[in-house]
Length: 267
Image 1: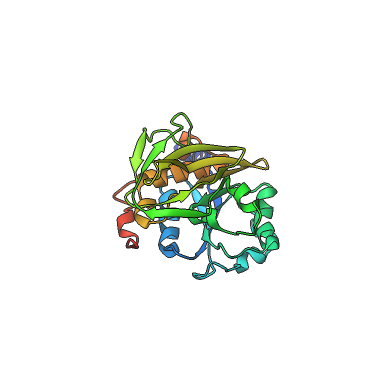
Image 2 (image 1 turned 60 degrees about the horizontal axis):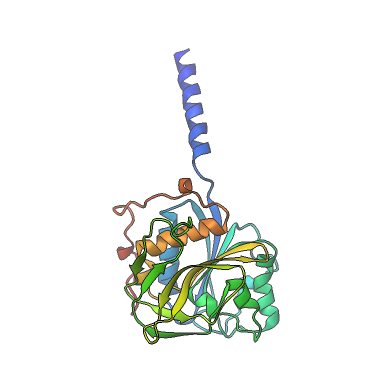
């Protein structure tokens, strides 16, 4: 009888634990292209976010270092099938055929949420605004490289909670924002040194009823590895996937997970 009671107690405990544990988000990271340490960044992003929430990652790193690559993964008609969210951290500005851009956008128009990071904003320049509309902002260039202050504009928003008024990036490449599209809420900004004009650096966007979270921060590994960066990237991914709640976010153990040892910074 005692053994039966013990087994029953263990069974109930296992069920309770299984119910309490969040179901992992199935996330697809697409990366590759010009001008960034994507080999290092895919490690920083996936391991940094997974230290904060439950994510089952699939990583597609294709295209070499060319800006014109049309990666094989996108050739599949159902390339985003089975994923809860797609993270675009790629730099293919010269893959500009309209049909190709439509192929990349199709799953998102059909309901797959997205996260767009840094050079993703400068991709797929087809001569139309289709990609910019998806991202939520229009940006075609950036200024000089320097660290800058990020100003939190939405401290009451769940994505931006607990960050305070400001924080500083150690290094940066501030993108110039020409347009903020309808349906976009700017969550944080930074001011250009040359004219003090604010530029959106973090935002959330509704694209044809689909959630898209975006940030132009992330050129340098040192900046991407900041706790603030990985914290808001995690919250943005959870928001895009419709899973943002305090129960899904945990504080990483610095002894078990040290990003400084993960990959050497790129200059």
